[in-house]
Length: 296
Image (tube, rainbow, N blue to C red; front, side):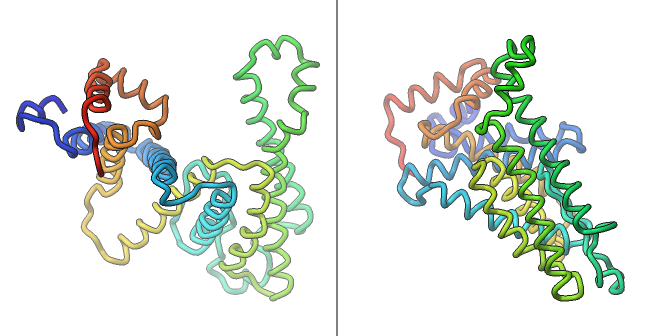
């Protein structure tokens, strides 16, 4: 940012955030390749969340509980379908992974899981309920470490209805997802990849029990990556570092939004940017907010 200011003699819309952010995002190339997918998934979700706030601020796209539900329902359903249908597809941070569609057509005449349907559904629902309970217990103790010294009070606090929403959501989501899928196999006599679409749509109503936009955006992030990887193969694009280039663009958009819509920018990202630049970005952007009216 300072170099471009020295080179051009002034700040511009692009040099205030987009270009410096993209250059800074090039640090992804020195990151361990095994962690780049996680970084990209998180930043796609972060930028998507940020621009939902920007669109709401500009009155372009109202964000409500209904909007969040539609995002979660559509993205999760399509993601689960892609994970079943597309060979070699995978997801990061998305907890619900469906069974792959068997290549052998004889195996498609039955449910993809092993054993009895009821036993599989019960086992999966209890497992995910326990996962949700563990995550919620970590969340409860993170905000109040003193509860660990009083186990009775901790359990009483943990099993309040408000703290049981996450485990109930996780367990019930898997129950409905697997239940509807098995029902469709029983009714139609064979398994199909599209069965997961109505199953996930029905299971998505569990989102109303525990609304969480972050989970919806994780589904969107994974879906966008799966689709992009698939189209990259179909179009036979050259083997360029597309994921790394996308990460650089996301970083540029992140810095750009701090200049254009500071009221929408996450507070914790302020601290990250200010720490990484020794508070120089804070000085620059405070002057921008004070003396300039930026229009994008």
